[in-house]
Length: 134
Image 1 (cartoon, rainbow, N blue to C red):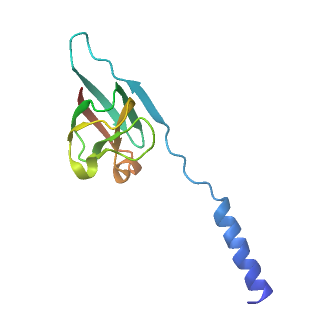
Image 2: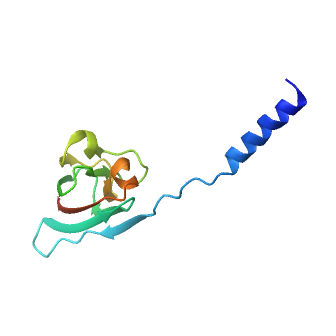
Image 3: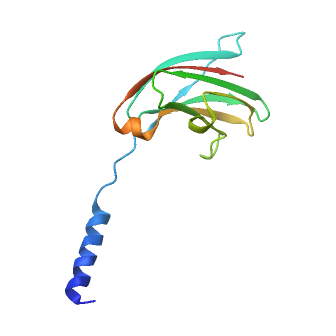
């Protein structure tokens, strides 16, 4: 490879590395509170674009969690994530709009509400109702 061609290739590579990657929106967290004597809570909300909300549910390992999700946009989904790590227990985009299962660990289980990337990039929005029970 000639020096000129090598220099051009290296310059192209360096420029590619210097292009900033679009920043993702930070994940917003909201604590779920059950009313006295109640074992579930219903939350209504709105998402737009790349906005993501984690609903935090304090629970112990082995407890059963149930979640149902209704959305005005078919690209709106939820996932269930354990207190630590980002490997989902439940993935709404492939598993549907309801979940019931025993939790693997104690702590704040996260119910993450989001729009699929295609809708988020088009800055679409959704209204949703999320019912969480323990």
